[in-house]
Structure formats: C-alpha cells, structure tokens
Length: 175
Ligand code: AMP
Image 1 (cartoon, rainbow, N blue to C red):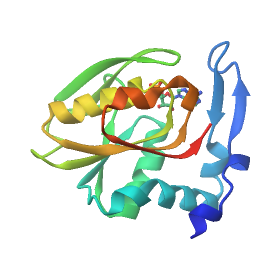
Image 2: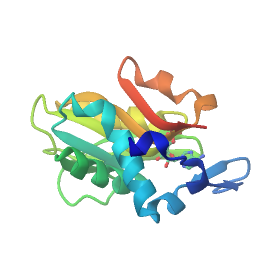
Image 3: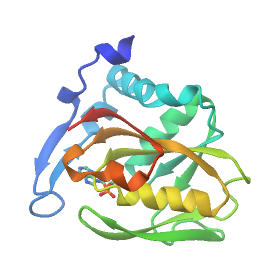
C-alpha cells in the first residue's frame, strides 16, 4: 500500500517559537504541496474509518478544512466546517475551548447534522486535544454520533488523546 511506504517526516517542517515562544510548530504546507504524499496521507487518515461508514466529515478551521475536504472526497461524503467565531452566516451552535497556545471558540451551523448522523472529525494536528474535544461536543450537541477523530500528526507528549474518551483517535504520524 502506498501509504505505509511513504515516509511523511520529510514533508513536515518544525518551526521553533511559532506562533509564540516555546511552541514547536509543525508546518504541513510541504505535504500539502506534494500531491503523491498528500494523497497517501489522506488515504492513511481515511483507512480505519472506511468500514465505519461515516455520513459526514467535520473539518476544523483552518488546516482541518484542507485535510477534511480531501478525506470527505476520499470517503465520498460531505464536509461540514467547524469555524472560528463570527464566520458562519446562519444560526450556529458554539463551544469554547483551550488551545496549546491560547483560547478559542468553535462554531457549526445549527442544522449541519441530521439526528444520528455518523461524523468523522478531521484536523491536521492533535496537540492538547482541546480543539478535537470541542468539535466532538459540538457535533454531539447537534445530535450527531461521533465515530472518531482522524489527524495527520499527533503530538503524543501532550496527551490529547485522553480528552477524547473512548472514541477512536487515529494519527498517521506520532511526533
Ligand atoms: P489542541 O487543541 O491543543 O489539540 O491543538 C490543536 C489545534 O491547534 C489544531 O487545529 C492544530 O492545527 C493547532 N496546533 C496546536 N499545536 C500545534 C503545533 N505544535 N503545530 C501545529 N499546529 C498546532
């Protein structure tokens, strides 16, 4: 399989002290710019969830939109954007959360999911897990069933996985 043969590490740039001192930022733009590696990453992110037959992907702003849209195409389902405050034009549901670097809030259109729709949450990086947890809470608040979370990179030392409960968390790269 292409995805197990791809060494993804060369496609990630580590940027010290961005966006604030002490943060080692994992820049995935080289991966996004390399079509074969990006496709292999998307397939690897989708793989464990194919048999679970999600109805929708929930992509988290902003890099989660890039991975999320590609995964939605790969799984042949729709994508719902989880956005920063004030960006969505219609009635929204929202949840506040803490980040590795700061605080924020995520919003989703109130009618984004039908009751019991099966949702896969997608982002580029799982760090402390606060963002993914907020996305889970939002989807569940709106009556969806969360199948799991798929990320390209998990920063294992930050323990974000523990915030996701029993839900399946899948990472292509553990750093
Ligand atoms: P967290 O809520 O702490 O799990 O943070 C995850 C979110 O913040 C994701 O949307 C990531 O894009 C971003 N993020 C957090 N830490 C990093 C990092 N070290 N490098 C790149 N993105 C990060």
